[in-house]
Length: 239
Image 1 (cartoon, rainbow, N blue to C red):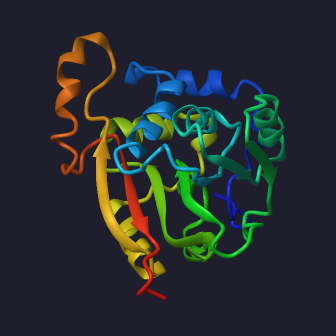
Image 2 (image 1 turned 90 degrees about the vertical axis):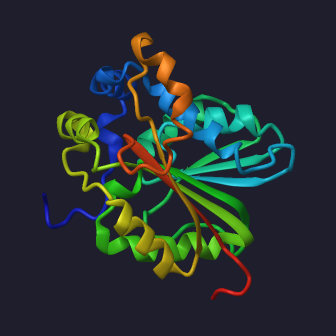
């Protein structure tokens, strides 16, 4: 890993990104769209999608998650940012209504204090050097409104299939996965209030395993799911 690496820029992977990703996750029995959509469906367990929320898709890439944010949060204003200018160009081509995309420098989030109700990020922090995590979270906290929510989805290094997929994926070669214990400590140290950690995707999506999928919510406490997410809030009494 290069010592100069602070965060991964996906400009070189934009062409054919979804095809490459689908190939990398073929063992899971699902495609890239499934993994984008299920995360937004998880948000619906906690969020009122009838409200006119302002949502930041942090590390939006080519906008695939924003498609489903737009679908399931019809009254929201959605903003996507990413360090990859080429990915932003692809996101803009989707022409999603009431959705804007822009590139940023990876350090300073270019928005005002307390501007967003919700910050969503998916599989981004393992592409950012760990020494920058605290500063990024400080920025996320800054732009969240009081009582605003932060959702951070990550790969679970405790899952051997996840490690195999990441190790073999072309654009994950420099990724350093976040252990759930590290992730929880990071949130706590940020001054955000940790509300939940939930583990997801315990079974492949092949038809053979479909009968077991309904049990995954019951297993969400078990730290061996292929992925997991943190839910945190900016509460008023914390600084």
